[in-house]
Image 1 (cartoon, rainbow, N blue to C red):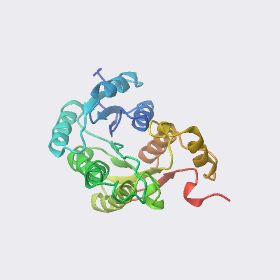
Image 2: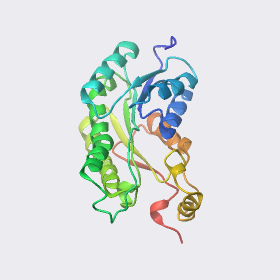
Image 3: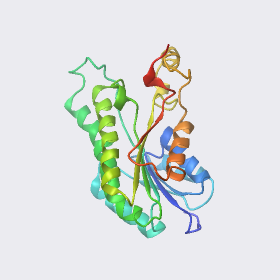
Image 4: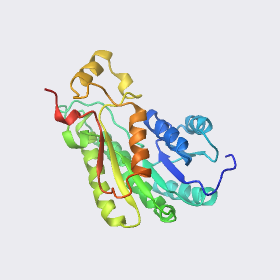
Amino acid sequence: MAEANTSSPVAVVTGGSGSIGAAICRRLADDGFRVVVGAGRNLDKAEVVAAELEGVGHMAMTLAVTDSSALTEAAGLVSQQLGRVDVLVNCAGMTVPVAHDDLDGLTDDVIDSIFATNWRGPFATVRAFRPLLEKSDDPVIVNISSIAGVTGQGSNVAYCASKAALDSMTRSLARALAPRIRVVSVSPGWVLGKYASRFPAEYIQTQTDETPLQKLARPEDVAAAVSVAARELALTTGSILSVDGGRPLGVR
């Protein structure tokens, strides 16, 4: 890690090597943050993201959100090297496509994996990094959610439920951690990233046509919402910020 101005704010991004996470890391680096690019498994990819960020003081780190003891150790390392955390972005997540009426296809193992990553993981990460957030003058937690938590439409029933639970956690922690720490959700619809690339172009076009603004989010749109939530919305906590082109409204 290159030497940095220790007065620069610090952002920790779980899932920072994915398409959405990497865009968030780039935006926060452009905003002047020293960024910790967290990776669940692929640390090499996180190191590439960190090396390409604007500015100095960035680092890549394994942040396995399903391993609470490892998260505590990671928070200790961040404390030693960076001293505090100003923004924590819970971007790590997982899903698998399972038709909503395929109840047998949504196995217990899949359900448990989704909730361990999408709900328990963010909670455990907040728990581990709370002492560092409390050292900041204006700390904020941003949970990357999904409109699936509101609409009940998404890759599978458990995924929708996990995002609804994440939004509920946002509201609960916003109350529990106030007035010291703000907590918000950024809730995108379809995002033209790695997951969307698995689907045929015709299917993605249908999703676009069913969105009132007639366009889907880019990873950079999600990153912009994170930046605004972290830097501008000083009186916003417990809120769900939509980045979905009006998708839940349907089309005329």
